[in-house]
Image (cartoon, rainbow over all chains, first blue to last red; front, side, top):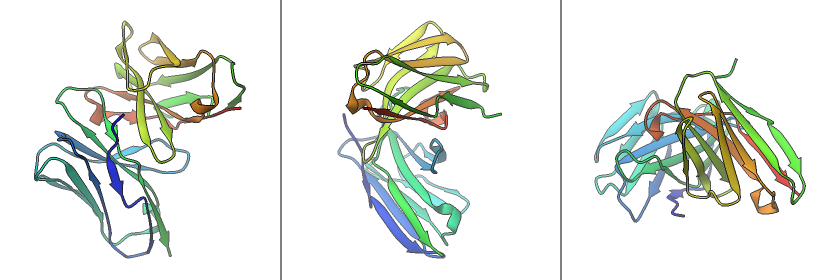
Length: 112
Length: 112
């Protein structure tokens, strides 16, 4: 099945640094979602994007729906230790469809 | 109490055995989903259900079956487990589109 190409696969940063990750596809999506997963937990929705060009923030997190509708970006500013986890992008191709296509995840590790 | 609970949290079984993973929710949502997560592949949809009488196959339903016993309960069965079904399994619920999904904590399954 189709997967989204998420990069980087892992990041090792210092506390306080900014983080950027992205998700790309060869197909157009009409919804982009960003999730965070912590050990022993299910994914938790961080940000949902519904319109090309949309820029949405959730605290120190900012995500953008790419103009081409084939990509999305997530930025985390001034990282803190609790940002550690795996971040997933997910996309929905068709309005009303139940299926989400997920990226492979970006594992974020923060050195204090 | 957690809104979405999954039992067991961890399970080891042998090839050929039939096993059932259970999911229950107190969120009052009509829609329930089963996903599997493999390292490097993100989440993939196995089955989803809009209500007790509605069951739909997802992306990777072969080798799996489900039962929606009540609005609050959705079980996933592996009729004859095989090693490549070793994965982390998540149940999710929603009251709208997939972007509103709330994930359970997951069941880690190892098939020997």
